[in-house]
Length: 552
Image 1 (tube, rainbow, N blue to C red):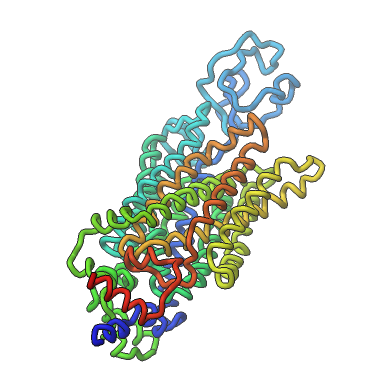
Image 2 (cartoon, rainbow, N blue to C red; image 1 turned 30 degrees about the vertical axis):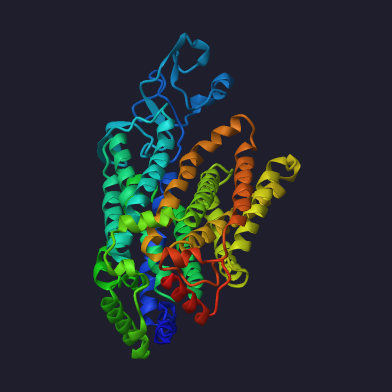
């Protein structure tokens, strides 16, 4: 009987976190620090859309262009035949004077005139740009594939980095991983702005994406500092900070058009993350999962004092380690292998990979498409990202009332139907096609937010960041494919959106295989994670079952 009483006295960490309060001084300060990371990280993921923008260029015609040649000049329109030729060309006409009628042949271009001479694309050897002397060789004229390579390399680096970040976060802590990644991201991002060659820039882009992503450990910290029922609200607030970064970024690019200065403006604020090593507290749940009960209790008492609340000392005494394995110092590798050996965990892992592939393919594909919509590309991008705010609020309301599974299933299926239908809208109803596109963008963001939260609730604490990062990393194949999807338009203009819709429906169908996690506490062990979605027994029955298992 004593054994049964001992079992029933155990206090779960969520009860203690609930006692600390959800909106105290500690949570407000932590939220402000997390907000900076979310807002800046959103810019780092897609800044190449503006930093490495597609600009117009044409061959320099020696007989027509002087030393200060401009991209658009009157003689270009002297001949109808000349004006019909594409401005991006790699062979220049050999002419006498500036009349195409005197054309005697073609020759390979060796020099170009750019619409924006100070753009990333421009090739410039010891030239003057806005009265500043630069020596750099990017040479992207007639090599358009190099521009798309930047986005692909960033996604590939991010994919590899997630695997590393998850391991660092689970082994050394959320705070350590976030401070390291944030500081490295700022340093490498600023170094990119001084790159003197294209391939040097590519190397820095890959490194920055691989080791500079602080969002993953910060996300884990954000859901682990409060009791689970408050996690969705906290995440909604932070997601809006992420969206604000995407809304503001185009206007920074508009106000600071020179790509080097643009990078310096968006990366410099992240240097503040270095101070987080002093002011940011570690995740109590991570400390608890690692068996560091004394440090976790000290931090709980510190937060309680900061928030002005009293914690019952007997509750802290009843806190116990979640798993005997954390007491005996089992390696992180063995804990990860234990997670993968579970058939239930493996099934969830495979479905999560499909989820992540789908949401990264769709979201990155939609953002890339936004800058190709007719009109001001800066305003278009901001308006498209603005749709994420109602999606974030809807995410909070839906998950608070309808849990996780049903909202994700509905958003994938309904969004997929919208996207599949969009290419078949008659050309005379362009407004309807644009409406479907915008609605799909909102639902895609909604799905992305749920998957980010849902994945973290399916796996145990001691491998949560690792499993979340592995799912995300493998799913990032979608972001590698996304920059190439516009090429499908050469076969059928609606093929990219049709593809997005089909993958969304497939991902939604697989959601039927997953358990509901909304009413379950965050699992600390594989055994607890496997029980998610099962009918829960009363505490006395659970204790009796555990005692019978030990006896057998």
